[in-house]
Image 1: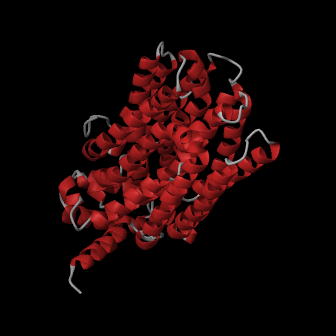
Image 2: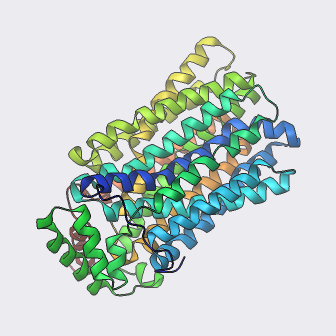
Image 3: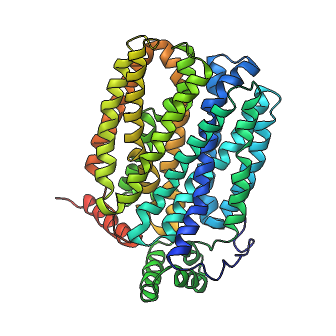
Amino acid sequence: MVSGEVEETPSPHWLSGPALVVVASIIAAFGGLLFGYDTGVVAAALPFIKDAFALDDTMKQVVTASLLAGAVIGVIAGGSLSDRFGRRSTLLGVTVLYAVATAASAIAPSTGFLIGSRFFLGIAIGISSLVVPTYIAEMSPPKNRGALVSLHQFMVTVGILIAYLVGYGLAGEASGWRWMIGVAIAPAVLMFFGVLLLPESPRWLIAQGEQARARAVLARTRPADRVADELAEIVEMVREEGRISYRELLGPRFRRWISVGVVAAGASQVVGVNAVIYYVPTILEDVGGYGKSTAIGVSVAVGIVNVLFTIPALLWIDRMGRRVWILGGTGVIIVALGALGAVFLFPLQNTGVFIALLVVLMVYESAFACSLGIAIWLVNSEIFPNNVRGKAASFGIVTHWAMNLVVSLTVLTLINAIGAPGVFWLYGVLGILCLVYLYRWLPETKNRTLEEIEADLTKKALAEKEPN
């Protein structure tokens, strides 16, 4: 994946203007669908993998977390890869790794082989989770950027739902978990051929000194009267920024905004969403005594709510702004976590308790879908300089995957140690801390160019350094 190594295949002649931006965003967002499917399918597959390989709670957590450990490595590598080789070339390489690692996971003959193949699958997911929102943000005009970047999260929720549905459909087959995993090869192949049709990000091209190619991309994706102005804005910002090291990114100019990206990403995990996504069927089977089909059916309901409540944010986040969705939704999440802990004080076998659990899970997941679920990708794709966006965003995304890894490795252990109520109340306390920080520092970025956002945040950071 070297700059210029993968030549851009011209898109169909009819594909230009807003249509090209939307199509490029949808194709890139297939990375989100793969991300959602491969992370969500473990919820349906894990009860069967447990039986196939005789796993205890510790090994169930290791199998789940192996993908997340790979994702951490993928994010760390992905920032430099996308800044050096380009967003498009990196995405092409990722789809190949997706397909190969998925196939290996599906045919795994042993626990060790499954853990190893899921680790490499995680690397692909980690790189994709960084590069896809960055690419979409850099291709999108300001007025549509929030919705188009959030399309990535929408596709994540769609992927999770598809994984649950496939799992439910194959729940009657002991070896069905292999098909559950292997299905993801098809969208990886589709994404590969789709990315071949896409142009490179104009912002990345300018950072590489390829101004003519950048102008050509902008001419196909912007109104004619906006091309010159936007090109000039990007060129000026790239010229001012130059090459910035990771050490400089942690300096006073960017430290505050790195921390905002990190907290937004960390908040999406410390509220325990993946304790729900990965382990609800396992918890219901082990704690509640429900059968596999019923337990997976609950996950399907959660997945449907996840998709449905991402849609309002997609439609209105550019109109209403980021803060109202992210902060308001986080508040509802915290209340739902308190209620969820209370529900687990009672026996899940009781029909009334089971219905209460479903209701609280729906409220929790709906609030997450339209707030923190979107925040991690949108915030980390908007608030950093053009030519270091890959590196800077990696701080937030690696936090997402690292905290995801911690939650996945500890949730069953914590439930055994302090009980389910204590675990969900702990997540609620951590959510309160994140909400306080984001209320203070989360910027509003709707209807502003990436260059305007950068200039404003830099001005604020420098003002903090000046004595009163």
